[in-house]
Image 1 (cartoon, rainbow over the protein chains, first blue to last red):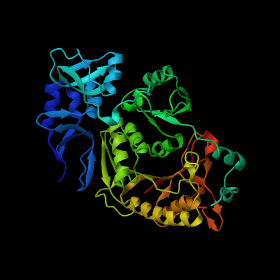
Image 2: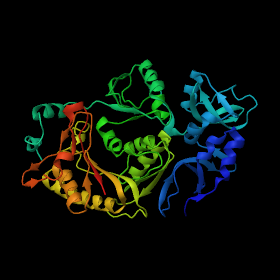
Image 3: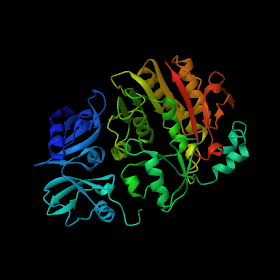
Length: 141
Length: 296
């Protein structure tokens, strides 16, 4: 199985998050139930392990990754939740946040100040989608 | 190998030995793909970091920090900086890839130099980042992702023989080595012996031969190791010049360093020594690194 180019996934980021021309610098590739965003020139090899950054996981609905939102999320104009500094720290620890989603539903870009923290899921409350590898610990600053 | 074997090879040897027995300070560089130095450094300083910028470069020695490990911050998790020894930045800086270049990083994990090159290339062009082991590739992929590098392709293979199916503008061969230059970080490790150096030198020559095969005419190849022994450095580079027809470039480097070694024991390296670069721990308070810039 190989990475196969499919730039129709750009539309997801345009429609869901209102991202403009900044998305055009990436080509999108499907591989193993994931979509990868790649800003390099095409390179052919039968044994590519990783191509750019995983941007989406393909489930019943598309799930954007925290890693890619941390790059592109600054350009998002809709489905964006801004947290206070305290709530931002809780979110990065993997905690859920009440009372911030308003009318939003589904996956959102979560910011705090100028930082894009990553992906959240608005389902009544804001459910942190920060992967364990990116969660901060109590002793961290 | 006893460090005394290098007494005649390393200038200010007593200072070198003294520094080798001191713990190595941490260094960091700002990941300019995500944030500017002007934005990040005050944030870290507000948290209690004491940082010393080196020579106007994006390289900061951590003189004091309020956490046990320099990676224990929100900013590190967000990919705003990379903890990397200054000496380890130099091979990528000397290769100096430009936006749009087609670059091969032959032994890329854990990705400190790959991510620095992506910064220099502004996430354009292509970096093919190769490594041999699954575990090391996981670390490489994690760092590439955390830093937001989107112009890299990771492939797995043995750098001595893997065919990459293309010729590259620039190649970084930061070769596996016996790691004497990292001794300050890992003081419990045993020093390698002569047979370790000879065995490693043979592997490094195979890698250099494979690198040369994948370099475009006129392309630039940086060869580096983090070990001091000349058999893994000058000997390999001299092989590249004599047997592979590579030319060693003269490099102006405006930071404290030493030239290559002319001879060691029965070996002579006269053809390349003047143009090689040796970074010793007692010069800038770093680890050790030996570098050559080669042209095809």
